[in-house]
Length: 409
Image (cartoon, rainbow, N blue to C red):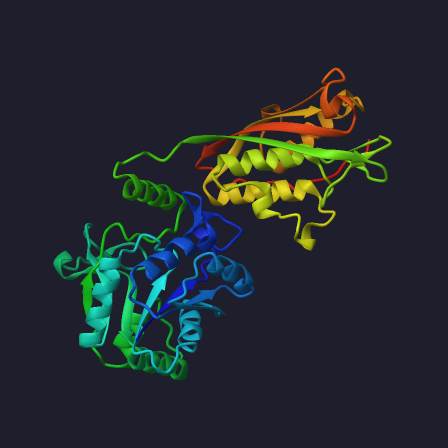
């Protein structure tokens, strides 16, 4: 029986992200989902253990539910302080009948079935099978001051990738020995080399089996996915445009919140959150431009966690998700449609609030209000609607958003 351990505990530091990079979307789908699907599509595994970062098992389990298959058992387990500890936690979940295990990084979502099969075949025959590719660049060994000590012959060097497949007993022995001796290594092959005295066999990897580590890697990975899906090389879009629309009913006993401003009025908008119709429309515009669905997908009105939620916080989260996909908001235009109350006096503060949350320059955020001259549900003062358009630009995923504030005039 073959089993896979999918390591998904990376923090995304080099991508300037506040979250685990395993959840960064490529073409609208999290890397973890793409990597998991690649393992499942190979048809080589009876089970997969997803090792999530501490505290992220529920998030991983929700993603797993969308990828589950009847013929493959998929588990989620919490990882440890580093990659080595996380792999060990994954190994501890393997059933006794597992004979070969392949350890794969969720940050390598472009792995192919051919690589997976080659690694497993080598592990069955020789005890190990590690994907690797020849180096394209000359490598220099240097001292602490940057002076070259030697130039190793490039022909004998390889850049190691994942999957790294081993007989289960061999890899367990290597990790157990490392626990006893305190040895730390950056990959499983190094543990087997150092502690088991067993030669590690390499198999041919693929230059497209890249590890997504930096924002530039996201661009490359999306371009490769596009080429695979369409058969043509299509450049990553430098900008995207999204449109949003929302409606809420006016009712007694609710505060009227628009763009984070509490507007004095006899009635407010009904909704699961604070019902900020303008912020909701802008959320949809941002998410839509980034290819991430809509507000209902990310903040469902069936989730009690969002009951009475500040919609500017939801907007900030939408901006963060867009940033994780490599996009920042360049400018936004919002139209609020309401017969009453008159909103002109509050629009400057509304635009200020949105600019802070979007991390955009104040002149790049425009808010306007209009009536319908008594026509439709807005004209009859049954409700208020809002429309929004957002332009997202590529390559500014490190932008910092300010904390939203709600203003009462």
